[in-house]
Image 1 (cartoon, protein in one colour):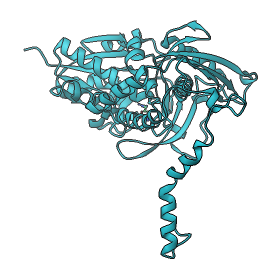
Image 2 (tube, protein in one colour):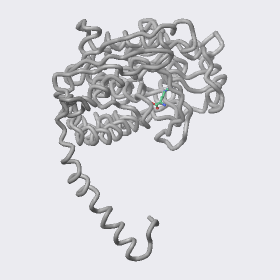
Image 3 (cartoon, helix red, strand yellow):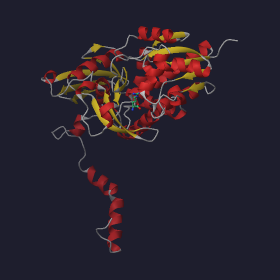
Image 4 (cartoon, protein in one colour):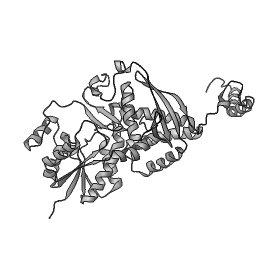
Length: 408
Ligand code: ARG
């Protein structure tokens, strides 16, 4: 009888390489490796694919899903101005659901009943994989070898690998754990685990030091949006994907886009995280600036709450969930008139909006101006304030009556 199959989310690193053999030995399953290209840097993905075969995977595929990632995932994140805890643009949290989707599709295609991932038991990614898989196919069994095996240290893991002929890294291991894709880089571990230690310069690859030479003169960019998505750069029609790359370059050159934060993980612990997200933060800055101009006040304020909830859901592995889908529907409606241009200035680690315009602008010069064309009814303000402040006036009178004046 043919052996059952297990699809493995393969990265080419030590953990998922060891996982290939470990699953074969401990579960007696055939392993099919899937490498998903979401725009991670520094990797020859064909080499990674081959590596899985050389270790013993029965099949190994690499899928380039970058366009889908931009169109179906990053576009939603941008429309939602998604920042977990108001800071982190969800780099890793956004890539996991698209990886999950392709794992499940592939599992269906090749009749695999199992999916495996290489996450530890301490992070958010395991949750994103497993809840995502359950949402798309609740009958698939999930294996999490790294959570199960007894290889406590990296040395033990390397010994286990070497005994079985799995290639082990020969250079001294990079002390950091890095996860990256088109939306940026997440850097953890090593000296960063002490929240008092300043991140060393050598962890950064997308951004220059804002104190350095490259940041001498300010740089400008004009990003044009249509219905909430970027469509042109400096007047030239340019795709969203290309705009992300170009903004990574420009903002990165000016040292903008570094985040150093303490973050609350879903599993209950706080962790120190460093992110490099020049393009993502630039685009969110510009998108928000255009919304400030085009969205009616109540909608804008309400959307802020929705954005926070959306980001929390995605961070917590709920990409495929009814609430997240419903919020997408709300966000989509808000974007109909988010069309126009935003001018940004980059200088010494900053990115500021210095201009915005839109055919749907709600900014009314005659209402806002203090010059002769002023059309605002100043007298009407009196009645407005009387009624707006009425409850407070009533409360103050009452407080005086009971002798509690001055106390809240
Ligand atoms: N803390 C971030 C998150 O949970 C980044 C995780 C990075 N993942 C990794 N395997 N290094 O989304």
